[in-house]
Length: 262
Image (cartoon, rainbow, N blue to C red; front, side, top):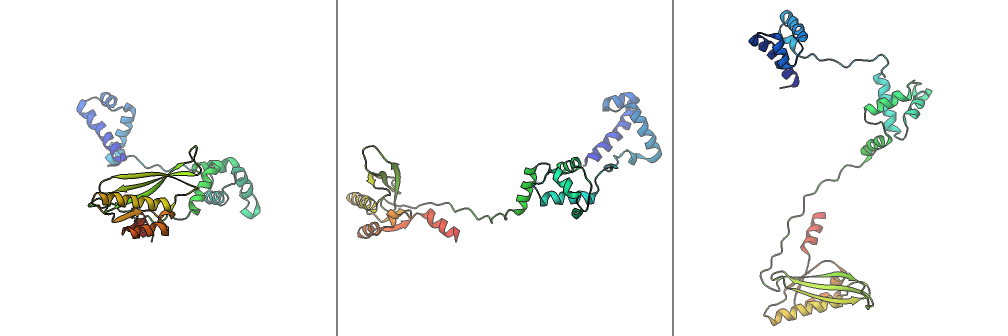
């Protein structure tokens, strides 16, 4: 049901209510309509039928000094082609012979641009930037939810390094070398000082320590999971894992990201 249908039914209700109550003024007072409007509608109703009570479409009045559609399109085209020009500049340029010698006041140009949402320079520049912007990249499906399966201690051990900073009394940078057993959540942590970046010497030492303590409790270090940092890509670290007969696995999120980017 449209708004016109609601108005039409309300007007019909006015005449039905006046007949039921036997009083035109009481019915008009109840529905908020002046009684003179009721009698004007009644004359139309008796002469042309109930369809005359429907709201009539009214076209927008055309003012005699309104800008013609052709000139309006010319102004909008110039505002988009030269978004840095204001209404005064556009009015002056349109008056030049090469643009057709169109006489439009700067106030008229500003009112037209404001009506189309282009009254400010920022609005015109935003519109032009929207047209010139590259298309949005194709949305890729999200990364799958990752889960690491670990059945027993030593099945998967994760190694990583955490930057602590330069502490008083130390010559270099303090790093925390951390190992976490995925199955039991048992954690090993060591603080080491290096000149700048983490060292493969200490990651190898931590791997050997983890393997030794697991072996004392009847478990074996089977696989070590790391990221792709230099301290884990070093030959010394991978040689230590080979001696411990442990497999080196990159973090699954990195593997999934590399596969997702292909």
